[in-house]
Image (tube, rainbow, N blue to C red; front, side, top):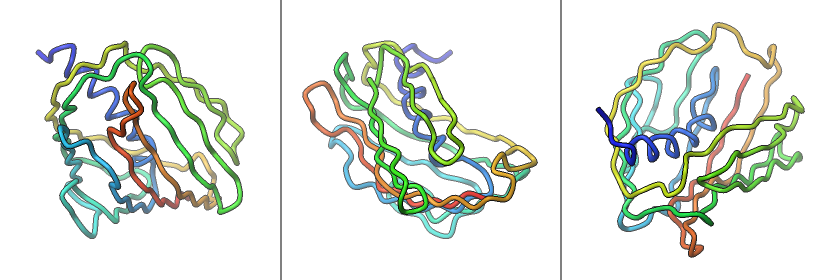
Length: 178
């Protein structure tokens, strides 16, 4: 049975996942900051060309394929009210997709460019207590692309800061979805 702290951290870690685990995508990421008291290793069993201290990188997945792997991560200090989750991306090099939400304690709402779709998801309750998560995943991606063959490229930064403004994690991400 997982502790509440572990589940909260899992929710935060997995909230970053939609940027990574889409489908029929290629992506690469560079972790530019990770707080000294935290660690992250997200590893896919197949589909990636390289690996670094933070896990798999330079990955590609096809629609309908199985995506499996593991996450081993730890948040070294609590994230309290005032902590933020931010996305600053360029879609197809000219459309901006930037938003910032509370990392915990409320819903996060944004409109996805290109498809002009509103997305609203609950962030975990505050505080997200310092904890670790180590678990495997095994999912089958949808058989068909919601983009109906349209190719969309995105690049930018995803980050989390704590309530003092100190960076918890920041990553540069480049992805192509079709």
